[in-house]
Length: 276
Image 1 (cartoon, rainbow, N blue to C red):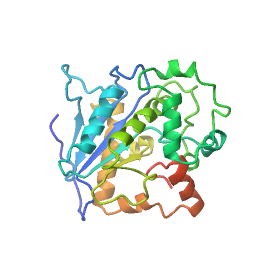
Image 2: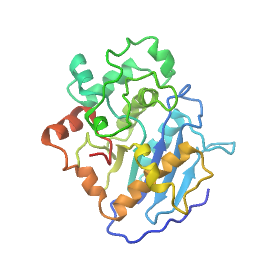
Image 3: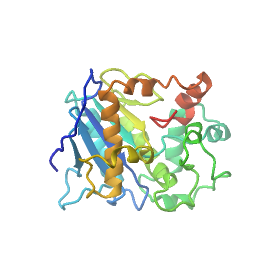
């Protein structure tokens, strides 16, 4: 799809060259394409487009989780010099109590533990659930989620449509693989620090439901796109807009949090970029 130009009132020195938004889904098997996984990209000038899988033989913008992993790995390790920021719509962690119950010291230890327990790189979330004990408190929230009015718990499997529980349990094992494959280029925010290196590719958790109303009335908003693609787009648009007006660094540094909150986020629970 051709790039669509958006209007920009002014620019400053921008940190990134490309902004990628990903709307994620835990539906089905990891190698099955689903309409729930959509990718949108915005360049420095604010031009946007939907992204299709590279080897797609059909006219589809639907992705499988395995295809998306390969795309993210290639994007982060291609060595083309582009500075890329990726916002993804699933939790990058779970509440701190989980770490305490399982004796996990930090997020990297949690990822190793979680991907071994939830083999969603080869199985469906539903199949894995049959082998893993249920969570004691399915409504438990992370600190960042308590700062929103609508975020749901990653432990809550009762919500079927668009459930963050399914997307989180399907996605985290792939994040483990991505971190292993692209460690030299990838900065996972905020676990690798609140201030990414200038040449790092950055991955952050973003919640498009908080952003959709901001962009849906724009004249250039693609109303013919399905909602999942629009959600991917608003992530990328917000990242580009924040970078362009010089406020992205403030969101990355999150100085509105207390020291205790920043420690919990950086070591265990993570944070939704833009909240707080």
